[in-house]
Amino acid sequence: MAKFFWVDARPFRKELVTAALESGAAAVMVDEGHNDDVKALGLIQTIAPDGDIKPGEKVFDFTVKTQEDEEAVVRAPSGAWAVVRCENWKIIPLENLIAKRPDGLIAAVSSVDEARLALDILERGVDGVLIESSSAVEVKNMAALMTAGAETLGLVKAKIVSVKSLGMGDRVCVDTTSILKPGQGLLVGDSSAGMLLVHAENVITPYCDPRPFRVNAGAVHAYVRVPDGKTKYLSDLATGGQVLAVDKDGGGEVAFVGRSKTERRPLLMIEAEYEGKKATLVLQNAETIRLTRPDGSPASVVSLSPGDEVLAYFEAAGRHFGQKVEETIREK
Image 1 (cartoon, helix red, strand yellow):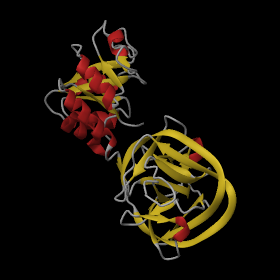
Image 2 (tube, one colour):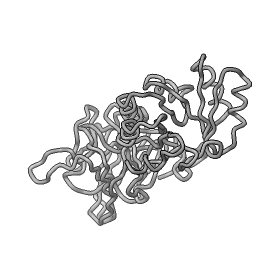
Image 3 (cartoon, helix red, strand yellow):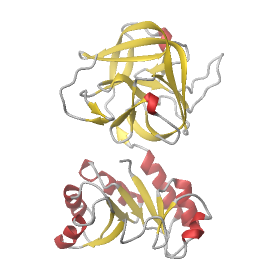
């Protein structure tokens, strides 16, 4: 589940609701009678007695001061959200609750710094935060926190073993709703055990205008890394979905899919190796398709030679509907 944040706009303040809309908040909390006021400003869920998410049904409010209060949170209905306020101790109660209640936890916070702490506790964090601040700027700062550094992956320098032409096939072009920076792209692989960092099309060339939102990612069967440590088939990506945009240092941030294009093109297969582990990827055979060198610069797939280094990510194989599992599996 991707992390999210809600905004407490009580008493009703238009500027807070607007900031929530502009910052990508998942919902706003308002008093009864203001549901229509929110909807007049934009499309966003409301938390209110007459809203989309009703307190006492889908969301419950808790103030935690004692162990008995913690147990009350744990007993909250399964499938509902539990908003937790820790008045005295900020960390220990959330640690206890994360260990006891695997999902549905939302921490009430007053600042981005508190939110950062709550989202990282026990290397798992709460599922979301409710920001209780009168500052529209603080609300907008939440957007940067939720997207930047969503995940950090240990990329390695893999050496190219071979580049082989395959002929015609179907490949997927992923157009995101983000302007991707130099050195950023998507992690894609024929197997989830070994993935290569495919560079965004933000490179100026004499023949094609740059498309800094686009990654020509690979053949339809390939896996692409998405948030929360999961993968998807490239063929399954669609408008509104999420992918993980990864930079040369392994920093990942959420990017939304604006469009996914599947077209028949000539393909090639690239094989790379790192400490005996191999990663392969089938990509379009064209000069504008690029992997990423260790310094973050793009490397056209048609100019790669054995021994060249590119950025890759390796993990133990084993996926079930995109979720990593521990099982005996062999892919080749």
